Amino acid sequence: MTTAEILFIISGTLWAIELLPQLVKTYKTKKVGDISLFFPAICFISFLCFLTASILTKNWILVYSHAFPFVCNIAFLMQNIIYRGK
Image 1 (tube, rainbow, N blue to C red):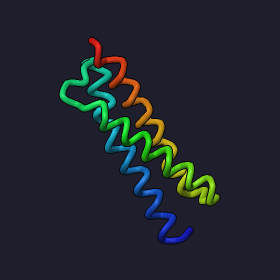
Image 2 (cartoon, rainbow, N blue to C red):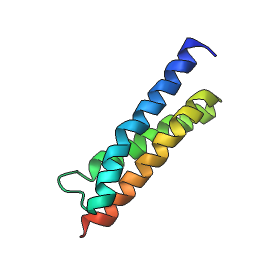
Image 3 (cartoon, rainbow, N blue to C red):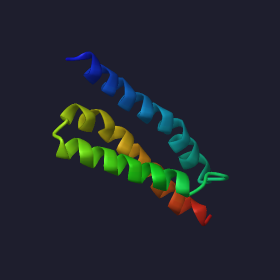
Image 4 (cartoon, one colour):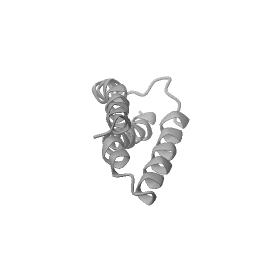
C-alpha cells in the first residue's frame, strides 16, 4: 500500500469521525437547530461528485475510503430534512 493510499484512508476515516458526533446529537435531540440545510446538501453533492469521479477513474481506494463518510453524510442530510419540521 502506498503512502498516498494510506493518506486517503486516513482522510476518509477522519471525514466519517467528523460527522458522527453531529449525527448522534441530532438523533438524540431530534433537532437540527441552527444547521443550514445547504451545508449537508452541498456536502452530499460534493461527495457524490467525488465518488463518481473515483469510480470513473477506477480509483478503488478512494471509493472504499470515502464510502462510509458518504453514507454518514446521507444520514445527516436525511436527519436535517426530517427534523427540520419538528
